[in-house]
Image 1 (cartoon, one colour):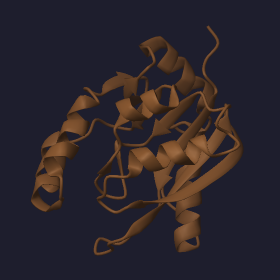
Image 2 (image 1 turned 135 degrees about the vertical axis):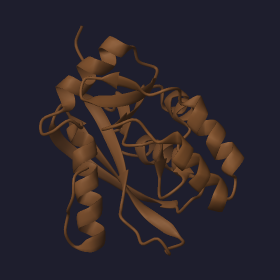
Image 3 (image 1 turned 60 degrees about the vertical axis):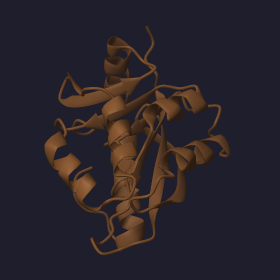
Length: 187
């Protein structure tokens, strides 16, 4: 089995707690661990447009035919703009993997979501529909449209430094560097 190696990893730019408005979203397109391109767009802080925006960014790019999987670091961007990973996979016809260093703290996420975010019930259903995260080597994943062994092969083929795939690491560095003038921290 040849692993899927052409992927896009999305990450949002840093923003202050009090910020309201649109947040930069960066997609790093990689073939294995080589950066092949960068996409950028904006999503609403705590909004509902992340899934549609990611779909548009990919579909209307020169990389649309190359991308074989979408990688996310967490199921939400720009605060609580929750990605519908099933709809994203269906609309693009490629697998979607949510990759994290450790399992999410669902009780804390639920409390924060219902205490301050519009549309909390809908967003919570999207979080639940993503399924229980499973350990896959040094990371935990939620996956749609891809089997466990194929997901492990994809992660192995696209990871160079640390435990996260390069597409996620690079999207994080690029988004931070553009927004704050310097990249910092781990993806």
